[in-house]
Image (cartoon, rainbow, N blue to C red; front, side, top):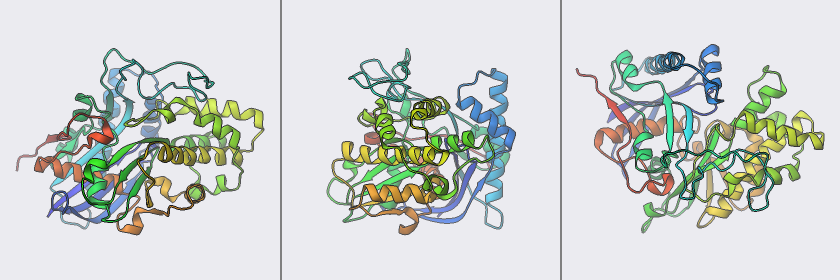
Length: 410
């Protein structure tokens, strides 16, 4: 049994999710016990700086170093706090804070985020504008701040961090990284399942029934926006007085504008085949403002706007499943902050009436801290020399060991 801390702050930048877990086994016999889970909010000033960087604000290298250090200190403090009243952990798996993500370039030369605009693609579908994320390198790039070496020093605990770079270096997206963990914690002998994470960005892991060549049939990709646009919209509509729509109550009081949803769904990204990944670089502040601009013609109320953005998240998930899955799942298990959005969950169930929509809580895995638990497992696998990526999900050609380890000599 190994006691591990998993740490992550997602694209919503809500705060640091920390999970203290006991882990045993390797893969098929993998067992975890969640001992404690907590979300530690960032200091307001640090959160504002992170969001500004994520939005593309130009900063100096000195300022970047200052933010990197501040995040590492915050992560280390979270790791220390989560152990209160427990025997100490011997390992930390820290995802860090993503501030930039660029998918690998496709053979045709366009980055796999697709065009930045909302609207129709080059096959006759209208666009807001035609800028495309491109690079001189065909490889992707992803930057997570909160350096593991400093976390290890501050906590005195061996730390594994920088999980995405090994997959990216061999041509993968470095995302999503959780499907392999999902496969060994949430698979079922008879039931095909979609594990749908609803963080700032949504991602899915399709896990077929656990028989025959089931591992080779697992699929995963980023489905599109989840909480990112909703949270940004709430902040915009309340002039910063609120940061999110609790339980989706505000959105539930509105009416979705379906013509807008159809228009937004024609965005290039939704039509790219997996493996694929995205982030705030596409579904961020600029995208929201373009959505709001197109919504003006419909004279929507604030509640209607939130209901319509929620419908975009739900419809993009349904479209993704119906278009790219080998077959529809027999059950959907939601996790992440968006799993608590009751209106979103209800809308997903209405659009997929034949598939039960549940949360991972209902099968024994905490939905709020599943991502933090996953990075604890990835750190544990690193120590055992077990690969953590799933090539069918990330697009990498082979399995690789994930993360960089910062050992504490005792």
